Amino acid sequence: MTPAQRAGQLLMVGLQPTGSSHALAAQIRSQHLGGMIYLGGWSGGTASMAAISRRLRTGATHGLLVAADQEGGQVQQLRGPGFARIPSARTQAASSVTGEEKDVARWSRELAAAGVNVNLAPVADTVPTSLGAANQPIGRYRRDFAPGSPTTNATYAAAFVRGSVAAGIAPTLKHFPGLGRVTGNTDVTSAGITDRTTDADNPYLAPFKAGIAAGAPIVMVSSARYPRLDPDHQAMFSTAVITALLRVRMGFHGVVITDDVGAAKAVAAVPVGQRATRFIAAGGDIVLTARASQARVMLSAIAASRAVSPAFGRQVDAAAARVLDLKVDLGLVKCS
Image (cartoon, rainbow, N blue to C red; front, side):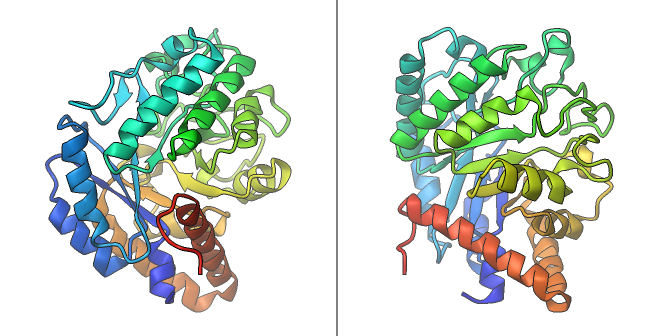
């Protein structure tokens, strides 16, 4: 692969229902993009989505990661004929662990029928009961399995992972190292997104550890701040969080992806190109942007950083290799 092809593997761009899948397929081809995500709420059903997914894959020369947020409850991007109405994580946790695995496998088969191979779920965050719905990103929408219980969240996050993998879908643990202790939603604000409690030994990391042990191939890193882990950087730009904690201490060797860096207010002050280069330099792999138009700037920034830093170039190559390994595991490309 050329350096440009490797860089392209590190971007995942969004497509809204009002967007053009033909235009995105052309962009995937010209920029060698490695992935896309359905955003904005699609209601056409599995057959309609399958046709769009096939069209998008025609642009990919090294396989295409096709993703969606299909957690359940208020976060279910794909609906319509062929898609079950998925209950919230809180409701899912009322079933048995075995029942959860079976349900998730069934919902995952629906994704596969739609041409989707990556689910940006489950949420592995724990919201303290003292915070509850005041936690805007998670608690307000009942996205955690059990408030105040990292043990229960660990059990059900692991079950979600096992059910997904059994159906051939790559699940994603999010939002490392946890969004449960903030008040602000990183999508819409840069205020109230500091967690002053979480450190490397915190019990709220248990759901992530359990999900990794269950075989989760992807971990999403948040854009919040965790001063007890890194006083200077947001998590997705932190070597201490991504490399030292997640990869080295917790032993995760899979793909690390950002939360959205395209439209999220939490990163609005960071230049677009640096949102990609700083994440990769910290040890990350896939930069997720809701705005496909940002890919050009990000790819240019990656190329420029590579030109002046052999060490950064090696990080790009290692990240691309991890993405391709995931694609091999999903049967999207053949190992050569």
